[in-house]
Length: 220
Image (cartoon, rainbow, N blue to C red; front, side, top):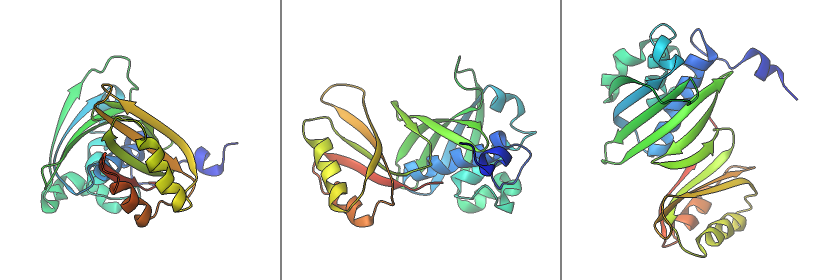
């Protein structure tokens, strides 16, 4: 059933829920996945994003999201101008990704620690988004659920250990997806839950030896 929020769209700054609110959420999701404030980003724009990004404020919204701004933050309009004050340098490029969703952005983001991530996502309408790739791993991440993201060694028993750690903290799993690029190498797991994932649950997961990265992605 569609609710009133789905019909009228999100509370937001800008002329377009897809090109502005959705873009801000994409930027914010990339920041969360990075796990720290970004200092540098290269953003590739495809399709409709590439054609109208200046007129619809998509560039400003993506940068605002990278700085952690919400979709209703008045500073979105000045995001590109104030990014240097936040220690953030951003460059844009226009690309053709073939049959990808027309509102797709590829964000190459670097944090102060040197950590880098590549996040591919699309704004799919009404301010809604879907992240389709993280560092080459195919994913389906909407930002609607409390989410645990892990990068771990691909070997037997790791998924069971992670889900057991969540169950100890009373976390009910709604959806789970595991992606790997090569058998026995690294894998990326996304677990979407019905309730917030506690810091204690995160601590337990980080304590699993084969888990290299673990972070919480709250709903945005």
